[in-house]
Length: 252
Ligand SMILES: [Zn+2]
Image (cartoon, rainbow, N blue to C red; front, side, top):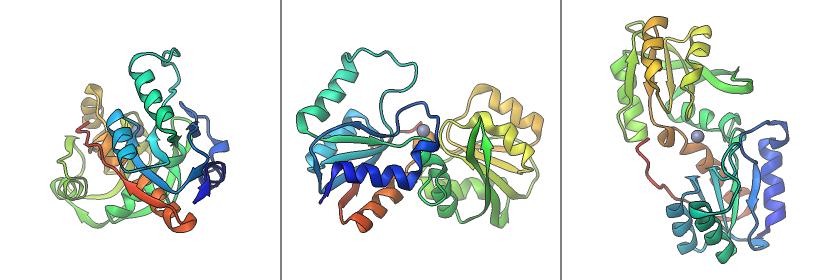
């Protein structure tokens, strides 16, 4: 058991949240009961995730995609009211970390994705004005595009979409989880043979062809499952909390 305030302070310091200009507030977004014994982690604070967390007796839900995104309508109505009402009625807190949980060099989505794909991580580059957002490194075994696609499919449980055209053998890769297709040009600047991210847009295909790079869209949800899990496991060990990761599947 830990006080909610202590848990949030620990996570905020661990992830260095004060150094980020983000699209949503990082840290405690909805305050529930003061004592936390059990946490549920997940990618997105959807209603399905909240329902499962409450059924599991969670005191706090910790996610990568929380609420209150820049530019969204402010009134607490409709879907937003139902989600917030669910948390508040059950005294369950919502804690969310966006960019800090992409870029952290141990618990970040990119670090965890690279580790689980057995990439040799060489470093992290600035992208879109965010320091350390774009990971780059080398494949442990140089691979053809179809071999890399198979490796992604094995880990993520879904076949990636491969567009563009690069060298027949891939050695250097760059990757960024989520909706990071706009960093394709940064991957080219880094000299990558292939770039992997979550989502793809119509122009991405043409850009990848013209740059001469392989692009793999491996799923926004699929590429962002691992950071919050690693953080949850760390909190369970370090702070002796009960932790369950709940996957609310999403094909996008
Ligand atoms: Zn995301």
